[in-house]
Image (cartoon, rainbow, N blue to C red; front, side, top):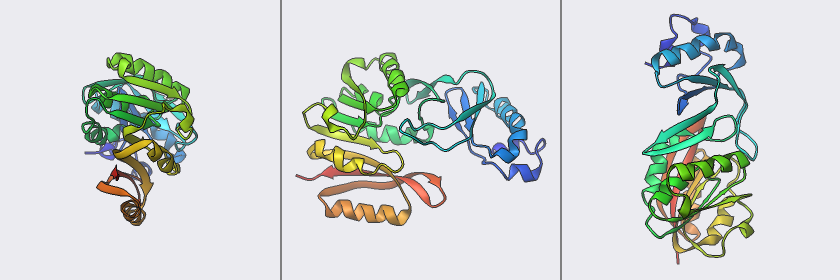
Length: 266
């Protein structure tokens, strides 16, 4: 049963058609996206979630799209008071404020898939690192991580999370623009994990210059299926071995997040 079934007896059918069955849960916070025309039913929807998801204490409504350098959206509180939470993912804990930082809990298994490939002693570069969901598991494999993030709020939470997860000594944090390669240490990297924000695909050409021949690149992008297939061919034609090429979540009609695991050839 989904959210619409939970409110079947309290919200009329026309209103149930105006919102999604799906919502994100980050720590003890549920995040909905409700259109303005059904805002009058927001309290009923929120109470239905809390009554069935006993770990949820706060319910929020995302009223704008994620945008800007900080990758945040406008959030309003429906039920509850606090937008700060601790989210647990595969044995790691992440403190964050959902109002001021980006976090997608739906990528948990994908983050584990990638970070499980990290080997001890590797040098790993993670631009757009946020509060650390790629950084911390990779560092836990005894790799040396360079984490780059422009949002100062995310950097503050990242610093707290490094201590919370006991990996502070293995991570160099840089607060700045991921496109500014002058911020990075001079050495080449064994691996780059690039969770690219929407519309910033040009980061690939910058970051790969800092990955050594034979190194691994995990590149995320937003495409439709035809665009992603064409991009996989381009990578194969331009000096990369495509190890993995697959969807990892829909974000809009016909548009998905895709991941490419690439080996930079000698």
